[in-house]
Length: 484
Image 1 (cartoon, rainbow, N blue to C red):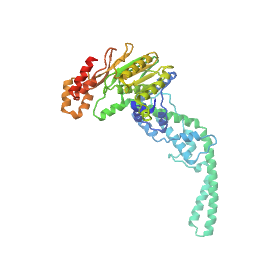
Image 2: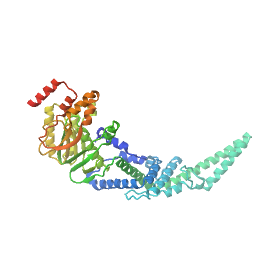
Image 3: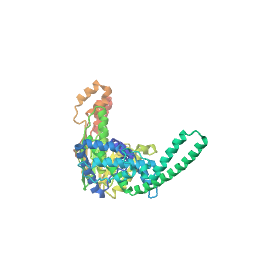
Image 4: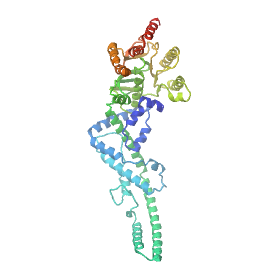
């Protein structure tokens, strides 16, 4: 699924809401992917870990605050670790970075091990590295080539300091010149000794390189798990049940991006429930009815479940999938010269290759909406007939009539069906400038199951009436509907 679709469904919004505290957690975030079907146990284990983290977060608030404060102190040493080998000599900055990493890891470990948390994230002790890089047992994270590493080095530095004091006091220029020459010899000797110490430290630290790599991975995973737990708590998300049979069910699913947009505009979000099986499910309803938001919210939560996240719903059951597609208007393709319809066909061709070889999910948001309506209906019916023959869950939103067959599931957006039109019209007459908002506020975005004979609601005509379209046009419309 390309980044544009992820942006549309609110996936990127959710990722941006994650409270990631370390560069290693950011690396894990960048690599987030859907678990493959053969990774069923890994996905279930990840969701179990999130569940345990959530319980632990509630019980150990202060400890997690301490963990997250410590996490914020980590600097990224992954590039250093990549170039580090048995013959590599670390410079003082690199030794400082490793020392700081080791101290922070040990601090993190001391808090982490006291949590009532049984998950498969373990840390390796960094005490040996800290001892190597902190021979004087100082509390500071700073590093230098300490005198404690070598008696000879200490002697050279002591002599150098004495010479510097003599140079400072001396007035005779010839004498100063001799003293500076002696000092230069000591500086060369000091640098040789420091290089030797750095070489020795580099070889000793390399013995622990696997522990460092292990801890980098563990820090990243823990950081991501805590972030998953915190966002689940924030939105009252739930643990999805992972199925092996091809079914998808969400009760009262939500979309954080839409929730927060509506909240900023003092509006409430209406959760939507949906149940899908192998075959074709169609959502019908007029424009403004929220079909696109529903299908995008469903795909968002499906993706999150398959990536080991809690989902934004009251309850959820999700099947393992070989693929997940959502096909809607592709503005990128349009900008490259393809028509909207042409872009849809290209994406469908890509999906069909996977549909023929595996089982997964395909969502089509208002397919062929920009084509000739007569051709659009025929194409959509043909596509539905094709999709029914494969082991795939297909969800299609449309405002076209005549799409549903008896072996398809049919959802309809409730829309304005239960609205008192006279009351609504009176409200619009009072505030015509805000008429669109008034109608949207009364729109019921929930889905209800109807049979294949149920026609697409004529909410568009209802909206036209409410917004005061010329009566003569409306009369023509009613006459055409009766004669059709």
